[in-house]
Length: 231
Ligand SMILES: *Cc1c(COP(=O)(O)O)cnc(C)c1O
Image 1 (spheres, protein in one colour):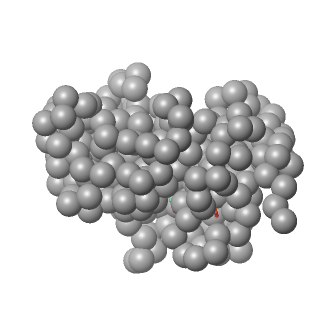
Image 2: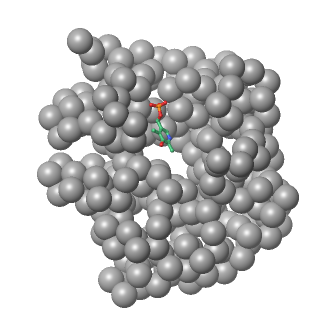
């Protein structure tokens, strides 16, 4: 059996320790509990422990779960998003993490304005340049993010990445530090006080991510336990 209370406390301790190691304030790091695949009872259990930020990676799953939870849950959509599913996500998600094309950003802005909602988004960067991963390459990131920032009707709150699937800590760290550097360079080019989120770090690598500047870690397994099916 999973002890979610213990899991959550342990993750919070690890976040705080990693922050202190990096000379950072633990309060500057948001813990996002990734609840994909888990049911409402599981989510409610973690909610009752005080957790408020939850993340889903499938549009219909978010649409189905969000109305079943209290209004003060902050929902994040962290999966790849197809334009035809924007309608399921926008009314429910406070933040859309994985915007990987200008076209998708425009479609989100357009749908949002039709509902009088101004969605907040992150731009996904393929920092490890693995072919199977989504997101802009580091080389095109600055131009594309500046272009997306010009779209009215959305707020670009920062960047998101996934580290490579590897045991090589060096490569994982490199991927996170690449995201941090890109974020800094964009801010040098265009001052933007909304642009302050770095969504990086999962159960296996969040401490490294925090050491490299993450402001939001997306953690599923270390809180909920192993998922019974792939997300
Ligand atoms: C599933 C998922 C996570 C959480 O992964 P864990 O390894 O279970 O912590 C984080 N980010 C994204 C984008 C995911 O799809």
